[in-house]
Length: 153
Image 1 (cartoon, helix red, strand yellow):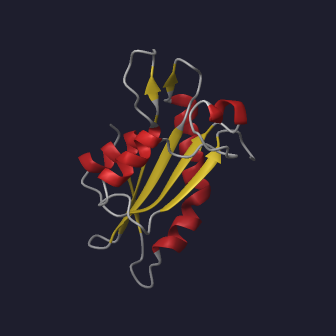
Image 2 (tube, rainbow, N blue to C red):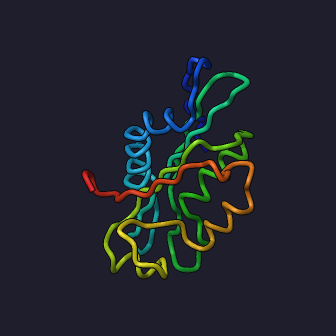
Image 3 (cartoon, one colour):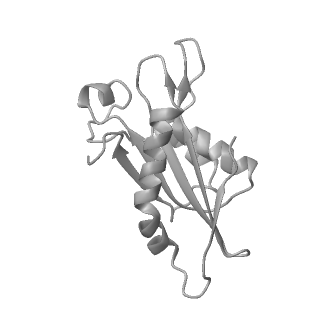
């Protein structure tokens, strides 16, 4: 588990959604980097995630990233979304401002993971359940963005 990256933020007129949009290019890079350099997949399906938190008590933002890990078919499923949620729990971070998931954009690959045809990989059923089981981390206000691991897509 890596330590969250903390960014100082001026508390006056802080808008979490605006801050997330401003950090979005960097969060996308972090998620793509995690997919490329940290993900382990026996099928070659590499996914990365990054997540942003704002702490109103300390006026700081925290950024985490993680990846999927499944080295062989018999290994338990551990997705990038699960990784960042587990890290957030370990660091006692709450109320994510936003979550970025970088995964494959190939329809044939996505069809093997998700029953819905989409242009980018959305959280799987196990990840959606993990999100529901952690309402203190992923709230109704959390912005979730899915992107391709391919640059400029």
